[in-house]
Amino acid sequence: MDKPLELGLDTFGDVTLGADGKPLPHDKVIRDVVEEAVLADKVGAAFFGVGEHHRSDFAISAPEVILAAIAARTEKIHLGSAVTVLSSDDPVRVFQRFATLDAVSNGRAEIIVGRGSFTESFPLFGFPLESYELLFEERLDLFAELLTQRRITWSGRTRAALEEQAVFPRIASGRLPTWVGVGGSPQSVVRAAKYGLDLMLAIIGGPARRFSQYVSLYHRSMAEFGHAPGRVGMHSPGHIADSDSQAIEQMWPHYRDMMTRIGAERGWQPMGRDQYEHEVVHGSLYVGSPETVARKIADAVKTLGVDRFDLKYSAGSLPHDQLMRCIELYGTRVIPMVQELLAAG
Image (cartoon, rainbow, N blue to C red; front, side, top):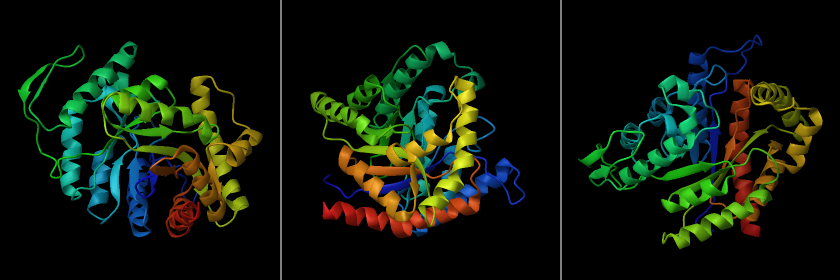
């Protein structure tokens, strides 16, 4: 890695439990996310990402609004989506909203675009699911053009054509950092490289080494398309507490319930404790004490050679106070330890 590793945090605004053990209302969850981001900035995280969802168990449907509120209360941390569901949005409006966020935050905006693993936005905004692939391909094509900040002439099948259109506001630096979120499809990796965009791997199951082939494919494809080397990041879920046992026990019931609920929608088997513990030890869950999590992150970073690691620190209904402690430990202990481990080789 030519640049220092960036260590960030992601949340989907998971609906958390209050002190009475009942789910908090969406408005309170959203305000809590802002406080979590303020703490992330204070403890030195490089990035704070918020996901876009349109369902009752996740509170964030308008990431840019929340990110603008966070921008007003933070100083250094970069702010972005995780992800923006580009398939069911208008690329021009997405660009304008993030260009505005970039201005509000004084150049700290980033965007991670993706197809989205949930499909609620398609019927909500009137898009046919049978056009899932075409919608993303065309909208990514147009968004890549918009990133040039030139006058745009573009046509496709899923949106009105543009002819010599200028789009405002401009990005002051001339560049809006843009990643493509990929869950493990080689075609998606090549598509990100085609447009010269950075690659964010969503590693939510199994060991990180399974994705080595995608990292190699991305770098090879970037060279074949004639682009300068791009950045590769990874996003994985986890939870940090003062000890391994505390972190494992705190996260377990909330993660189990979330995965079982989503799994029932997708035909998965309910998550068992053995599966959970296997993912903690050998797979994609970064759960434990600061020392345990730091070692696992450092190993994954060395295995894949990524430029950024984002911890998805929210896990279903895990309460806000435990999320705040996780963020505090991540910034004050995990980040320095990862940097030391990588420096030691």
